[in-house]
Length: 531
Image 1 (cartoon, rainbow, N blue to C red):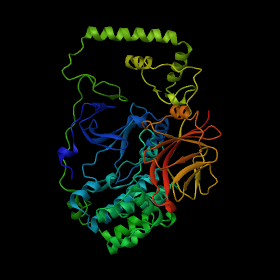
Image 2: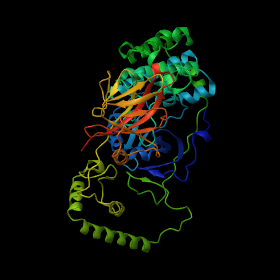
Image 3: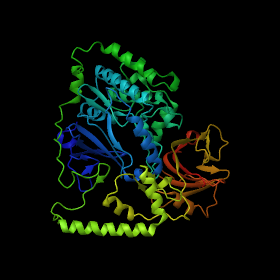
Image 4: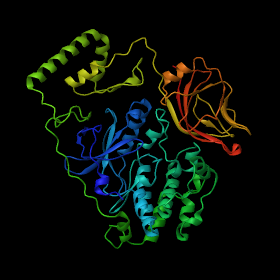
């Protein structure tokens, strides 16, 4: 269980000082999306600030989905959710703020105190199911419910990280070769690349609650391919669970999503067995016992005079050591005058290009690099007041050449499941249920491979993080339609091009070829369609 010193760590040299209008007080942790910090609202209420990793922020597909999912997450209002109270998907980097829950995660509680008793798990399931109802009512499927995303507050559980999982999953993470989902807690249809529905979260709820009862995943330990295979192809061993809860878990963990219990069913089943709460809504004593002692949250950090008036949409990183001499007023005036002169000169040289940009900004629009004709995949110009800092930053960005070819916008599909029964077309990114697609996984007695009727396949041996330009260049002289998988491992990247001009990057997440008759491949697929 986290002690105060473990839960609230001091800011490091590479941490921001201010995010938006929030002064950071401590570092809370880090995850696949980015770093998480403690801050406070102006009224002093603690909040958790999540700052997105730069690799994700630079991906236009992530930006679009993040923007959409944030808008949906703002509508979530539930007693058992950590409410999203603020966000800026246009910032560099993007960030969001949720109410801070001063309690351990379910994963931490189980690691510290062992498996939970049945009454506490029933209380947990009812609360998490109610949280998922609120999330689904906002049009969101969580997709990554797991013990570390369930926090134990004094009055029940809180579900976190909803509203951003789709944005993260669908971005493909080609820069790191990592998938955002947590395979051990996935539903069969998610592990095999099928349709994601609210029933997917019900399966994850069953998995999460089983972990609370057992202290380990219900589908066991071992290699990731072995666990995924058991989730997809075998039923869970419910005999490991207490007998009185097996009927509920059998319904939550049904292989067919249509046969699973609804969240309303879960809430009713648990409440009937919990009975009336005799303790004024604070939860049974067993719940408070598993939470441990209360954490003392650090007090708000006052804004320094130099940062109090900074724009609320920017992330301010440390730029000078504490001992730096303060800049004199005369020096500041000289720097501002020089910056204005430089901006004026650039504006005169820019001509119509700058005029067009100014026209777009005058209407309060946000021009994104990936959305302008002839622009590359990086760079944004946000609307707002015309400050000297904004002008200097804009002047440092090169204007796109009107003759430069546009980088196609990527289309990402994470965790595509390929085995001996299906196939893949780059043009529609969907895995076919037959072998008539262009790219197929084959596994014989001697070796396994990827084969294609018309697409060129090229393994990459350079550092990970291939871009469209890299794949396009490397594929110019490639001719092979056959790729042996002997040297391919998790994180390996494969560039592909089909006959219609689609360029694709396949990032291997899981390779299981030890048993050829049940071999499979899970890959993140990013496709850049022809211009």
